[in-house]
Length: 178
Image (cartoon, rainbow, N blue to C red; front, side):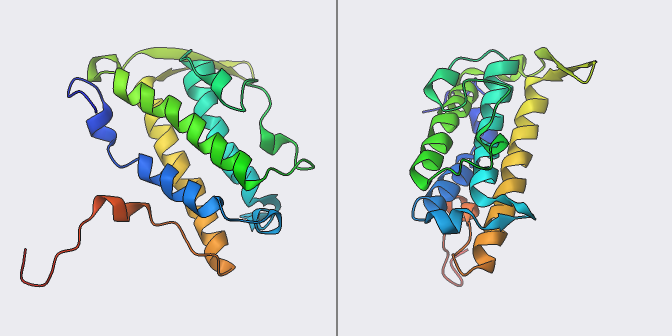
């Protein structure tokens, strides 16, 4: 249960993207996971891998949070999506989503509003940029939403359902009961 001194209450509902995506991916066959997302050479499985690996990259490799060793993404320079000749199966993808979500969840339960401005450097292409915990959380939320949307569109376009993460935050109300 979250403590009111952590940032967890501010990010309530984010976990529903992970749960919805995990549920949608779990029953898919290798052929279904190979369907393109966005561009012809980027399959669903690679997009899911990229989504999950990004969490570890930012939280563990940039912000030095523990947990990378509990995920498939222990090397910050290599993601599953970097090797399109090695497709990943539904079980691997669900494990990647769940194990990386555990890291996100732990950060939300331990980071406080006062620590959101903590900065860490990231070097890329000879440039060093400073990133706050808050900016990284916002980056990951929008990243999860963006790729979940692409995956949902690909699934729906092939008659495989879609993601509905928002239903977990709503409740059904009968007419006149508001």
